[in-house]
Image (cartoon, rainbow, N blue to C red; front, side, top):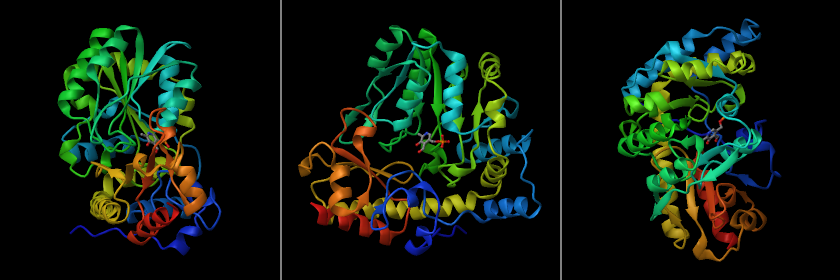
Length: 382
Ligand SMILES: Cc1ncc(COP(=O)(O)O)c(C=O)c1O
């Protein structure tokens, strides 16, 4: 029996020490960074409490149980059984992708992303002194897809690595198997490595709609590396643990040229919590998805009734609403306007790509009350 997962109250949330609840003054309602406002899954709480009780707070060492737990979770959710002998732990997804780029390319070489996209992907490419190649997604009524023809052109021009955001934050879209299979073929033809950031995958509302990149085809296994983590779907970002996965000897050898510190800098608490998430928290995740499903529809209802000028496509995964505010005439930075006049913190579209200044991203991983309050403050600010 799947039980709805309920969010904490505002006064409980205000006691949190995480960035979402520390970054803004007390009178601001924070709906930006991708943290959720729910109590942790019971199995995760128990596993962490047990560690603290036993003062088991040392470094992270060999941790095969995490790989086994992920493989089981992935088999059950997506019908993909990854090879537990081709997995490595990294500090987090960001560190994993940055360190992978350090062993895959030289400074100045080209790395592709597809805007509008999670802001740190832009930063990771700059961090390794690579050259960013933006091949924007194609959009039709806020449904986005990969522009395979433009991607091929840029691959031909020397792209070495392509960071795929799959599912795609902030646009809320899950790429289908067919697009991914075609992408894999192109990557093989032009010798591009696809780094598939699958951190949001467990939050797909219809698990069947998501295909892990390495499950797409034999070619995808040759050209792809998955980087994932339980941190978005189980709210474990502060615990620092991600998993890197390959399914070809060549890619496995490549990821093993990364320094051991990539694993040493991950956290034992993160590995324990992620293992509990993948092995014992599926019911909790299903309950969470029920709650988020209601929230994504609530956002739709509120926008239709209170902000009819705003365009919104109900996302296929997660708790991030990508809102086109261009009809409202709020200038180049609607998030700044709303923060100042409405006291709601949101992420501005400019973070995700130069052409998306008129968008905002709203995090609805919270209670219906706070979503309603947030949208009512936005309405009043106009
Ligand atoms: C697509 C994507 N990748 C990575 C991250 C960050 O992951 P980590 O904290 O493990 O680096 C986020 C956070 O929102 C994200 O949306």
